Length: 242
Image (cartoon, rainbow, N blue to C red; front, side):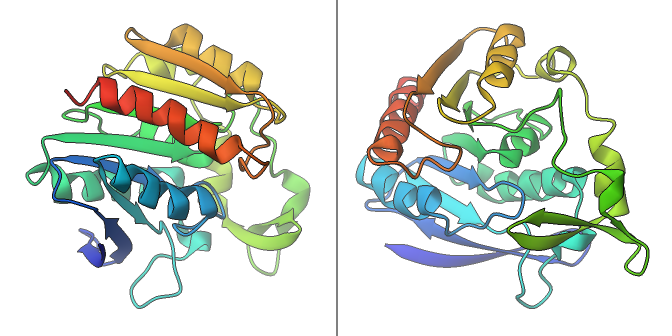
């Protein structure tokens, strides 16, 4: 069963998401997409079905959208992403006994900086680097827009506040100090973030787990990569949902 959910933020924006469930469950997985991503990328769309079939309700949502009162990427920051993720967790907290946060790429940073008190566990899917955030530079500044243009095939407008924020991100050790829940770090073996994943794991507190999907690129689009990603995640959330 699929249900559209709208959640109001404290600053009068709307968060649009989709709740999936096969049977009524007291366990929920919340997916948090990465920078320039969206809730219907294949790992979230297919993941929603997979985990629902394995006893977990899932919720996937957009951090920005064209819809009425939705946020715009150019106005967002990691801090805003974090606040909105906290709002989503709060919305579901009284309805579920166990809640897990799963973040892909920049979504991994979002959940690491969010309020994880009361959350049962975190899973990072090839989380973005904290030590070398180089996806945008000063040369991408557009004076006319007073913003930065990120060129990833398509072009995306990034606000000055988000750009400046990336220059002040905490180091892995500092960030992981505040995480006091079980964490699973899954890296894509063919991508460039394995060393950073190992740093996350090094500084994470126990209980913690680490794995590499050897043939996977950053979006886990290679044959068999998505299935292995889901299987690794399921083993973890099953363990901590008892």
